[in-house]
Structure formats: structure tokens, C-alpha cells
Length: 62
Image (tube, rainbow, N blue to C red):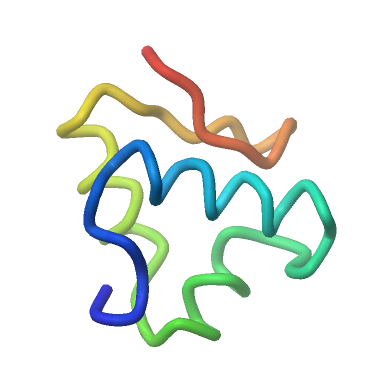
């Protein structure tokens, strides 16, 4: 996650924007482009109260 924001709110915003604007077709593709695993990002954000909705392709507060 070296190339992604470490602040959870900023990270969620950045990821959701990239997925919404269809820069990447999936969380896995986005994470691959930034050199990390989707599970790593999901676990990190889950610790901060966010969950990933695969159907909507976005993170939301639990």
C-alpha cells in the first residue's frame, strides 16, 4: 500500500472515485496497478469501519 493514501477516509474516497469513474474495472485490478493485494486493502479498511460492496464496487461505512 505504499502508493495509496494511508488515511482511511482519503483512501476510501480515492478508491471509490477510481472505480466509479471506471478507471479500473474491479478492486483487484486497481490494487494490482498500485502494487498491493485487494485483501490487504479490504482488511485495512475493515479495521477502520469500512466494508466493500462488490455489486456496487465501492466501500461504505459498516
